Image 1 (cartoon, rainbow, N blue to C red):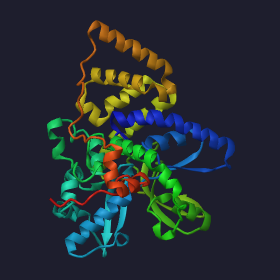
Image 2 (tube, one colour):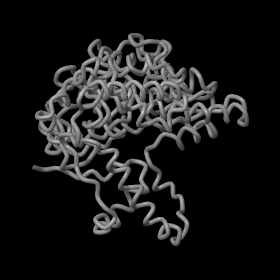
Image 3 (cartoon, rainbow, N blue to C red):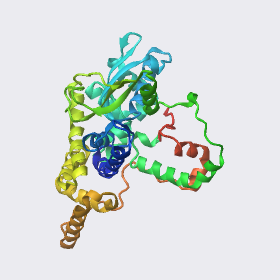
Image 4 (cartoon, rainbow, N blue to C red):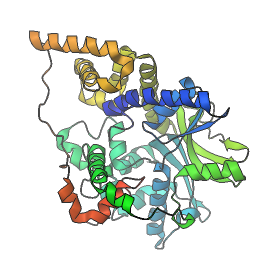
Length: 406
């Protein structure tokens, strides 16, 4: 994915935080006092952390991962009892950090089904194939976790470190989001190519009419409605922890239940996460904190340490390899990293000298990864034009994931 953790997520944060702090400056200069910034951009925790600590604005991060897992849990309970269970009848508590939140309660019909979720996911004809990483974590830590299978496999040290075993834990036949190597990049590249080709057709169509019947599950509009009308909305939001989750650091950005009405966004206290779940989150929080400080201050030492401490990066690469990797990434992304202007020049000199004297570490030139699919051309996409148009215009780029019954 490269959008939350691992080396790709860390550098995504370096690029995004620089831009986000410019947005925050605009908000401070022209917006009403106490304006609220709703952030949908990944890496969610890093971006929201930077905006709150250094941007001088109140920022709440929003994601749809909890809603997706909530629906899966309702489907699994339905499978266990032999009838369809509406999601709204399953009352969940989900807490942790973005893309690593844990469903610590799943109440239905007066009972907590948390202890039967492993049985249900293993029996499910689709999820047993597409959610292997999440099911393994459920078995080993006792609680189901967000986000998708592909996301989660990238945030942990165990599932993608050996190329010959990666396909044991992912599924590339159902959707890119279930673990395809570079899947997010492929789908965005295809979407941009399709949009550029199809945009004139969009402009020739009648203007879209907004219909409440087509309202999505994205939190943003419900938050605005609650703040303006007083209608209470319950969701899961990314906020500064403080004392909400008592065994995670107070400066961390956590994702927890919250309520919105005319009085604002109110976050109830969660208390302790299960110890194992908290330990997994704390690994990621350390990487996030270093990444934020690196991005804001242009600190290459923090940037290197963030990548070194990242669970999967550290499982695959040794320290000299990570130092070289950071140099290579700084050089490749120099145009979007203004805070590292001097560091880029130093990295270029360092790597040129290493190549000259033969100390540069050999890389796997041409390695496409263990589970990468080819990017489709516009001509190939035109064979399924309606689906490509829908995906190009969708907020959830994995909303069209196919059912898997193999």
